[in-house]
Length: 219
Image (cartoon, rainbow, N blue to C red; front, side):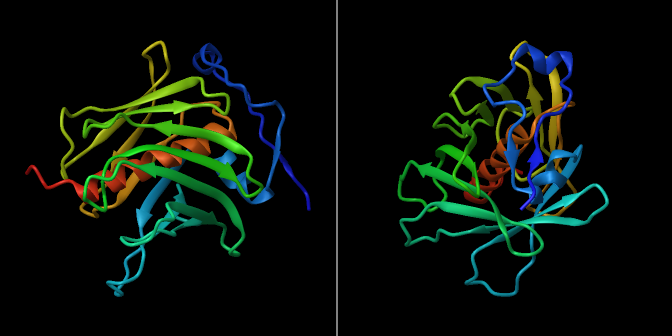
């Protein structure tokens, strides 16, 4: 099976917080569309089955399906994971999360680790135990490389924009909730971002979706 180099030219902003990812590093070729995407849309697939676990789709800027994310946990299951597969059903990413249980199925999460299909760590997203929308993106060595913050002071089911910032405070990307669809977010990747960091940013949207599903509307 062929493999894909994940190295890309990096902007001056990203050089400020270069990661510990080996360069170049080889991963599953099915991740190449993610590597070359500047923008993706993360949305929940509409289902008529109220008992089905949610399925999320990752689309490119041409509205073409790149990956599906299937949740593997339920209200009464101990497993807390999700997998991303390509259009052929091949597993390409794994999301493992830890929850703080407070009697609610959608309690705030502490962290989500993102690995490839072989178990290689891409990175981790950490979120403080509060409902404020601040997320810390860490590289495989545990060093912070980006920070994401909600422009609004509190989370609600209205319009949302999350700013992706370098450690020097410069805004380098955005996550924006789109339209009236509850779980539909557009992610504009920072320029020159490598594959591992892009995959880890998907976990930020997973955090946002879980928080929004568990939070009462403030509108």
